[in-house]
Amino acid sequence: MCSRDCCSGPGGSAKSGNTCTDRKNAKAVSVEKIIPTPQSLLYPYEVIQEIADFIVKGSNMRPKIGIICGSGLGSLADIIQDAKVFEYEKIPNFPVSTVEGHAGKLVVGNLEGAVVMAMQGRFHFYEGYPLAKCSMPVRVMKLCGVEYLFATNAAGGINPKYSVGDIMLMHDHVNMLGFAGNSPLQGPNDPRFGPRFPALVNSYNKELINKALEIGKQMGIEANMHVGVYSCLGGPTYETIAELKALRMMGVDAVGMSTVHEVITARHCDMKVFAFSLITNKCATEYSDKKDDEANHDEVMAVAKNRQKACCELVARLIRQIQASS
Ligand SMILES: O=P(O)(O)O[C@H]1O[C@H](CO)[C@@H](O)[C@H]1O
Image (cartoon, rainbow, N blue to C red):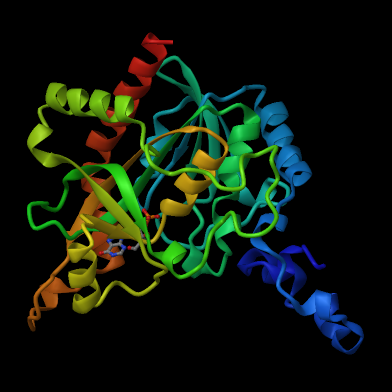
């Protein structure tokens, strides 16, 4: 079995110059070798432990809260104090960020009295990474000591009541990649992380949602805050009108290309999850010739930049409350 990067995503081909020894020696390769590595075996426990040790030793901190910054929301990591910054390239066995708005840095430090670690840059399926690789950093967080995952994303609003700039607290998801038979947990289960068949009802911590709603009121943004259902598609294409109509019929309020596999991985290893979507564009669910109806990443980034202050404030205040009650 080849478990090197060259067989598991774009970081690999960069490192290996696209030469995989298994591929070069194809004639001699046995059937076992050409069956793709099950996702769960790409990052064995020991490799995750090595990465976690590297971060804990390198920062001399043990984080309690992990934050994943969505597209254009990297400033969530800029408010961390006494920060130790690790570039992804310099972390052993870590993938690289390839998307604009995802800087590719891991920031460990203090925020509102808690030690946090924040990913300024997440990994997406459309970048060519298997889902287990996209969500591998969540397991690293767990082995660093993280108890809470804060996952944030930029998303298209399908619920007609949502406006650009609104914040949707996630209380559930529809796992479209899972419907298609893809999961970060696919392959042999390592019980040191969690059970073979994890339950996902109650994945999004209700207490944290309620606290965030209260904070929204205190910030005077309650009219721009919703509680809703997110769905992740594979991307990188934005959705067709027919797909958006179908998602709406399924009860989806916001759509993106991330987060769900991170939440699955976090719940598998029993982390408490808080997640929100910043609505960066309204998704059209009727046919029209208007160019305005087309989503684009520049708009996503611009809206995220405009709303980063409110997002930072929400995250900081919620962490303060977690600290106050622990
Ligand atoms: O989910 P995040 O990483 O915030 O990014 C969202 O924005 C990008 C599309 O504009 C996609 O990557 C989508 O998933």
